[in-house]
Image 1 (cartoon, helix red, strand yellow):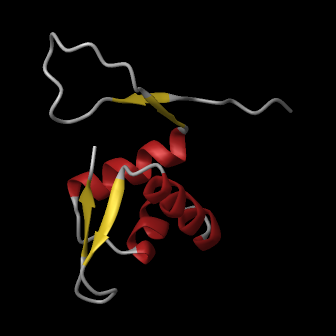
Image 2 (cartoon, rainbow, N blue to C red; image 1 turned 90 degrees about the vertical axis):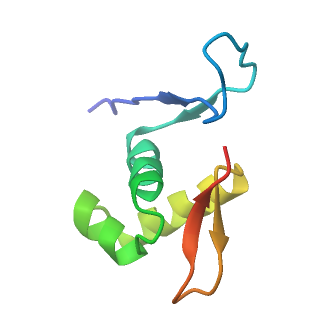
Image 3 (tube, one colour; image 1 turned 180 degrees about the vertical axis):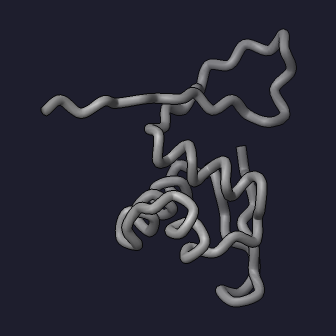
Length: 88
């Protein structure tokens, strides 16, 4: 069975319509879904993401770590009272 790789392009939030964007970031379906959930609700928890998307805890943790390494998101504050900040 062939896996269906769906990629999305994330454009920096502060980009203007006329700007030339050289650094596009490609994310697969789950990565894009998690990024959008965080963008819409910065206080979302890993458990809430798991419930909404129906994917494993390990997958969510791996993707969130990848998004942080790609400098798309950043954790601000403590684990319990903090929130996610969109960096790009």
